[in-house]
Image 1: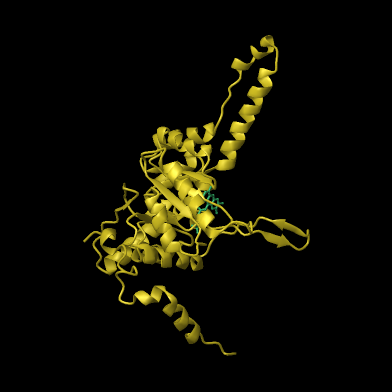
Image 2: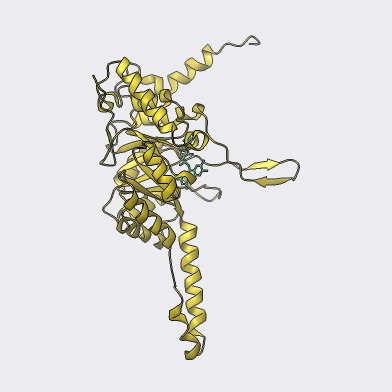
Length: 334
Ligand SMILES: Cc1cc2nc3c(=O)[nH]c(=O)nc-3n(C[C@H](O)[C@H](O)[C@H](O)COP(=O)(O)O)c2cc1C
């Protein structure tokens, strides 16, 4: 009996649940084609950042102001120039990716304020994006920021992007909310068709030799996946939007656990960067082999079968599990 690996994410049919998450590997058409040839079910392009859009708009505005002060003869030169406001290169990437690939292409916006920059979402849709992933990367570092204000800002941002487009919008967020489940429900109500759990905040490091603060990017390990696993299990069946897992999926077992918890798809970046596109095949074959052995007929049937609502011990996802884990820890020194 063959296993039906197909799944749906944001209403898009996927051949199986393994998706290439935003990373340098999804940043060129050649590399995207390699990922498709390796069997990936969909791709998320690297993010276009709010700062990039605003910077471009500001640069053009300054140039126009400068032009207005020049003599009419001098202004005659200006039509020769291409005033490319906005992220033209990114739009080109979306267009050429869409032409070159048959798998869904998800464009990614990364920002933190609900400003005019969000109108770019419409252009991404027009360039052919099948969906948009909105990565909200905001660190509430001001002591004046209240959680209520920060949460409203997320909601406004999601509303301001979803208003622009008819394609589905997934929101990629970090897990640092006091009330994650409520926030997830509010994001869904604001128009999100899916959530991508979770954004990894890259924590800066201190370099002792140089006495400098520096960014520190390390690839994930499988240990990280349990954060998404817990929240996907809790949210599955409760908010009625697609759920994608990102963070720490490296092996077929990792993918299976996230599907059992309730993920509609599993996004991978670190494992692709470390092992190359062929790793997609290893994951998909591994998932299929396990499901065959356990006599699951389809991913749809298996998805969420160990979510909090479906599993025999729902407390395991909450505080009870924490107490049990602490009490049962054994060390030769304790
Ligand atoms: C080098 C690198 C670049 C990334 N660029 C982006 C990006 O542009 N936008 C985004 O939303 N996530 C970006 N990510 C995050 C990944 O998409 C993914 O969510 C994260 O790495 C966790 O998944 P993983 O454990 O499979 O790596 C990047 C990750 C890495 C390692």
